[in-house]
Structure formats: structure tokens, C-alpha cells
Amino acid sequence: MTATEDALKERIRRDGPISLEAYMSIVTEAYYARGDVFGRDGDFITAPEISQTFGELIGLWCAVVWQNMGAPASFRLVECGPGRGTLMKDILRAAARAPGFATAADIHLVERSEALRAKQRETLATYSVTWHDDIARVPAGPLILVANEFLDALPIRQFEMSASGWKERFVSLNEHGALMLQLHAGAPTSAPAAQTGDLFETSPSVTAFIADLARRLAVTGGAALLIDYGYKATALGDTLQAVAKHKPCDIFDAPGEADLTAHVNFSAVADTATAAGTRAFGPVEQGAWLNRLGIQARGLQLAKGKAADVAETVSAGIRRLTQPDAMGVLFKVMALAHPSLATPEGFQQDGAA
Ligand code: SAH
Image (cartoon, rainbow, N blue to C red; front, side):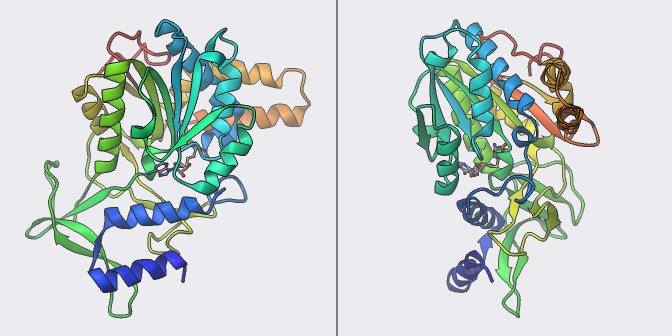
């Protein structure tokens, strides 16, 4: 039994069942506290670890946003959930081509895991970086924020339509003392029409994060780029998943040793952001967005003059990021921006929400 499982069971025996939201929050914190969980030898692999082109294009995207903001002499360059720090490193290398960007960028990372902060410190050793537990701690001022696979790690609530109406999923113990799901009183404030057995998810943590971010953007200016797997329109369904060593597992298998995530409801994100005074763009499928930003050309440039195996690694990475049967369609990109800002790169074809 993991230490996290022990602590969870002790708490449930003492205080009674906990919400699935509390369960996800406790398990996720314990999971990332372990440190570097990414890559082939870890549990899962993310876009910046697949190809440097991902972070480079995002770096150029940031540089264009900064120019459209009027190239302020100082702004907050923020990343939420930076993992190994690879994305920020690639962003900074690429964006440094815009004269003045590097000196203007005041780098802030939102990361709760001490072990991952240590890894990020190593990756970004040549830069001056400040860490925070929460976006609310990032000092005020114009900002450009990026978050890749951050929102999916924030806890969700799950509601199930029972014969007597909506109930909320809690985590309890069965007669053998094992973790199990149990329905308790609780209903979503609004939900699509549902039949018995249907599930509906909400994420108060995602809503609170987006509301805070959008309020800042509306007051001090700037833009945010959010990349994650998710869906475009509010819908019923269970998207909570657990992954360890690149394989799906049960959400109660080895709590704290598997990554728990849920798909992001991008229409809820857009609604929260527009209510707080920003414009929302997209979501655009990751493959289409990267192609619009020129990922194929960047790949050719990187592969030029290289040995065949190196060139093949570059193009395999780009295929994985862009192809529909890989990460190209499931992953989506959304931008939030101050209303006065020009439509960000890669969203011109779609119009604003
Ligand atoms: N963006 C990285 C890592 C994604 S994994 C990449 O693409 O490789 C999720 C990241 O979010 C980890 O760094 C994790 O520690 C962080 N994280 C998860 N929940 C968080 C929270 N509530 N507050 C701050 N960071 C969090």
C-alpha cells in the first residue's frame, strides 16, 4: 500500500467519505511531489519532451504577442505547471530572437512540487526565475502566460444521474477496507439533460484559475495560451483517467503513483474568461494550430544537413504532435487576450468567442 493510500484510508475512517474532488487533489499533489515522472522511463510523455519545435513555436507566439502589446519594457512571462522546465527553456531560446524580449521578460513559474521546482531550477539555470504556489502570488503587471497539460491536473467534481436525480461521487471504503466510489447528496448548478447512469463533470479549480487569470489580463493586459486535451462543447461523460508507466490503470490503483487527469471543458473556460472581460480564441486542434505556425518548415530547417536518423527523429516528433491519430486532434489550443490585443497567431481563421 502506498503512503498516500494509507493516509487517505485513515482520513476516511476518521472523518467519513471525501469528495472525488478532494481525492484527486490529494493524489495529484502526492504524485507530483515524487519529482520527474515524465518521458520514456516515467509515466507519460508531453509535447515539449517530444520535440523542441513545440516550445520554439510557442516562443515565437509569445514574441509576437509581446510586440502587439507595444513591446513593454517589462512584463511577466508566466508558466503554470512547467514539468521539467523544457517548454520554458525552448520558449526563451526562440523568443530571444525578438530584440528586447529577453530583457523585458520577468520569469515566474507556478509549481507546487518541490522536487519539480528543483528540476526546473536545473533546466533554467542560466535564467533568473521566481516560483509561486499559485497564480494569485504572481506580482501584478502585463503578462504572457502559457500552460501545457496544467488544467487537466486540476481536480474535478463528478455527478451521476441516479433514479432520484443528480448525486455527487465521493470516495469511501468497502467492507474489506478498499477504496470505492459512493454517491452522496450533491447536484451541478446546471447540466445537460441526462438519463440514469449518465455522468457530468465540473471543475471549480479550473473555473477559479481562469477567472483569476482573465481578471488580470483584463486589467493589466496581455494574453494566455492554454494547451490540453479536452472538448469544445459542454457534454456528459466520464473523462477521469489514471496512467502509470504509459498504461491506463484504475483511479484507485496505487494512489500517488499514477497520474490522475480529466479532459478540459473548453467552452466552460471560454465562458469564464469572457465573463471576466477577456476575449477567448479557439479551441483549435493542436495539429492545425502547429501547422498554421509553421511547424513543418521548422522541422525541415532542423533536419537539413543532418544524418538520416536525426532527420527521422525530428519528423517523427512532428508527426506525433500533429497527426490526428496521435496528439493532433485530441489536444487543443485556446488563447485568452485583453480585448485591445490583435488576434493571436494561429487563431485568425477562427474568430473570437
Ligand atoms: N507542462 C509540463 C508538465 C505537465 S504535468 C509539460 O508539458 O511537460 C502537470 C504540471 O502541473 C506539473 O509540473 C505539476 O507539478 C503541476 N501542477 C499540478 N497541479 C498543480 C497545482 N494545483 N498548482 C501548481 N502546479 C500544479
